[in-house]
Length: 346
Image 1 (spheres, one colour):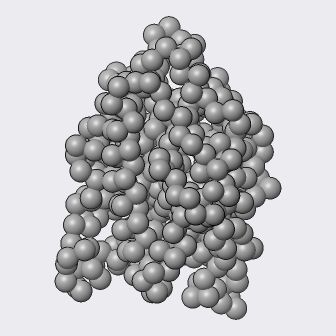
Image 2 (image 1 turned 45 degrees about the vertical axis):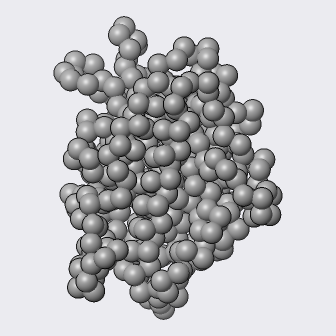
């Protein structure tokens, strides 16, 4: 269901090769909203370092990990313990807390310009680094690789959407980029999840584009265009890419932000019960105004979404899951899909 696209020829390929890549991306973004990338720029050593860092972080005692929790839910940094968030609240659906733990980092060397300094209290807060050997260097190495890949993807997006080449570049000069490393583990003897409880509840991502590394094990599911949930297991070494709300709003749902979730393994399931993933969120400038592109609206297809500042949308979405309260007051790009009776939480 998810198209696999080789983007190795994007930078140095012929016009025909670039056209083919852009066309494949357009089809995938129109029909599924998820892509699998091969020939990408994130080197294997960066992925290996990231996984080593994740293993080192999440193996620490819970009492130590809790010392990495930020002081405020507005700060998108540090540790989130299992059972403290519910991602489905971001689309206005109440649920039992999710069964994951996570560690978040942003840009590690924040520039002195006002665009960054004005949001040091939340979107550009200082990273919280544990005293665990090698972790900071390994995570930063992956962060920069994923950041470059996300920026290359926005170049492809501009090309595929017939926009000016620097359309997204101008709106991501001080992007609120965040890397969230997720860890799912079923411990021996732990109770069964309650009805409807997920490892990560159904949600859409909030920004422009997400670059995702995930272990090649089951768990991730996406809501397909046929209205049913489909399992997604990435090929080893491949990256998954999905669109966020802001891109759906810009394109007036020509490209959609896809609902996805992570389901718990069956109690009698054989094989791995651990799953690791790392989502790099490229969310745009906090002061960028997002409004439907003129090329994506018409008399027969009017704008579905009001203009919104990217940072306002991001903060509204972030706070709901972290306070276990409804985020539906902000724009919901999945409303038409999540309101179907078959997709309600049990």
